[in-house]
Image (tube, rainbow, N blue to C red):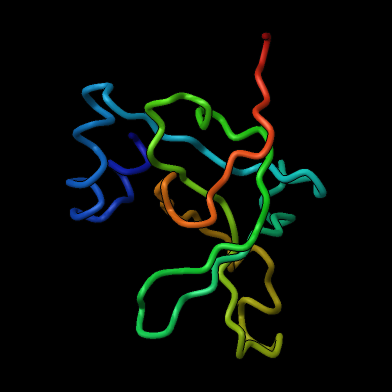
Length: 124
């Protein structure tokens, strides 16, 4: 809720905050990944590629230990990743500074391609 309150657009706040605040929904935070030391966000391999015309993003990646994702009320994931530009030849700011591309994207849990492959619990 705090991420949306501080950094969300008015439209995102209207869409997601009321149900989060009244407890009828919840969000998940997805940062860690199985193949990298993702406690350092600059190692994140999940990518966000913007679709032509600003119609959304293609998210490519696999997350691990996704806090809150198993709650049946979870309808929103805040996903940590990096924006990629398919035309980037590595000479741009994002190509030279791996921290510059880091961002978070709001992903509805019912978006095409979102799957929970192996539910993991903490302390049973």
